[in-house]
Length: 371
Image (cartoon, rainbow, N blue to C red; front, side, top):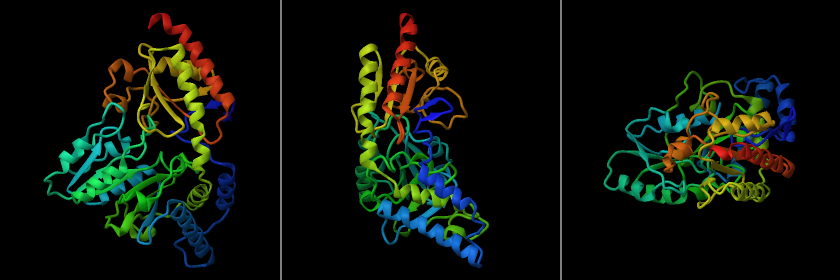
């Protein structure tokens, strides 16, 4: 997408709102109702929120006893799951988003990651055998840096065998791969609107089968007494509408352009290392390293060409630092500090892909003699 003459290829950080979603959000911003009020404007606001909740429930195929709690973000939803579940022990992976890794959950144990970017199921089973503590396993469905799809179905099966609960941060999965809450079987699912064509500032936690949760934000009785605070009406309505527009089949076509990027760059730079390419991945994401050329060098060169990409998670206060995900996958310091993530989106064009390839190759020609 061209934004002030920029080529935007950082959709895993945030993806632009779809036009129809923006239109309905702008219309809702003019509506004055507070969903906690009992007059007609309040009742209308409540109706709009519940309609959006149902739109998400339909898109996700939630069960009759599942609850969708709207939050200000996926970070808040992750905190609500990890802290609100009240477990004695939390097992999470070493490649999680900072909003999971940095939560001070009780008795936290880190699950190692295999070189292909998937979590180590044998290590998980070893951690669960003989455990007597109430345990929550938190593993993301899709990694935000590599795009690797984690084996959540197998994790859920292991959890059930050993009496544990499962939380999955599915932020990068919604709209990109089929997501059926009932088939998935997880107890908690985190989602965010701005990763799938909705606005920033709204997310949700799906709580399956009425699992008990202690609210982390108190002060009112909003969101079924699970999350206090006046609801973000316009954001929630836009989130629900974005869920209606999910097109997984259309998204999967981006894999052709992702593969074009990888094969072209690899042909010119055989030393390029592509992460997660031997594991199942979502179609839009490529994370690769050019050892010897720092992430900062590559980012600056591309930024000067008007191309927006990243070197990993967008939650690092604008800093360029080694990817903890790549380090967990066994990457060397040189590789972890020379990585780039390209993530395509619903409005990416092939011309933008070709421009990225051309500008990256120009950068490579300038630095290859020093590698």
